[in-house]
Image 1: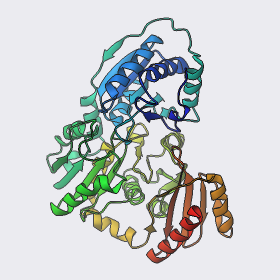
Image 2: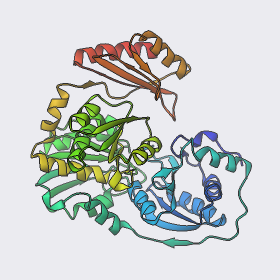
Image 3: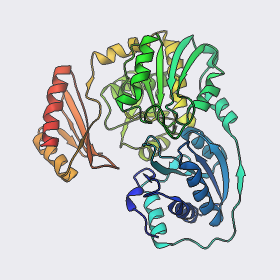
Length: 448
């Protein structure tokens, strides 16, 4: 079958519907998934996108034609999907394009929790099977059963904290017409101390209000304004499928994933003294500094959920964080979730008896970060990264994931995007002036 090879990404399958990813392709991917893994049961959920019912029908038809029984868990968030895969112990496919615009479709695929198919392990195998029609001969026709695990999910995530210990908190949550709204309301119904104001909680694949990626400032601007204007303690933003999570503090300021990783890591070390915590190569020095000071062991890892989950499971780390809003928990099957960190942060604020801005103040006074800056490039990204390494060769230069350059008072990481012709810069310094100076210097090389 002829198929656009670019839909087979590093962490999932994703493309524009119906140009690159239509029902015929979805059917073939379903067959390829069952054929490659040789599984007899597959859990399948979907998001709210307008294309998702058709893609669900296509991929499940392919799975069943290949002899796999489908367990339909319905329209769910990705963390509900991970929960189902972990609870039942089966492989899974989630019909979602995460935070991409409305015209995209895609699949996130679990081999067996916490192992997901990735570009290195499985996704390119699916591509080859689809392109060459190399399906195994099925011995039977699969069938579909429906299963609702939402109540079990609610009870499970509430069990990760002590709801009775939460202090009164005013929370505004924006789920952006994505998948988190319904399950968020069911979880918060068990938190009487928390006053929840919801924004765009109804799933709607036409996306009538804003986009699904809260990392884009325009998609969180209204939430920030409302947190400040309405005197909320905190604001929560979730991406389209609910595996990424973002926080607005009580000033209405967007909180970096670096600082959230550091604060939640320190909080987890109170529960699990001396534990290991995984963070990604882009992160602020605040992360290893706070973890070490709290008696934990910080472990740096490559960017991407396939690497973070694998490392956490191998090391039995209790928690992991990525600066782009993915937070992983041993207590949640090493998976990332949007709901779980929301609960953990409310627990942290209740125990600390402090506002989020007060917890952030020492970090903001010491660590000055650029945030992730993306540059579209026409040249080979490896050439640019080698130029950076040569320019700053007197520093400590490593090639763990992209190129990282470290001096005593500033450091940066530059790595290529897995999905676009972009170079991504994350830079930090010990003062705001130095951060700006070095940021501009590095960007001039990247864009030169």
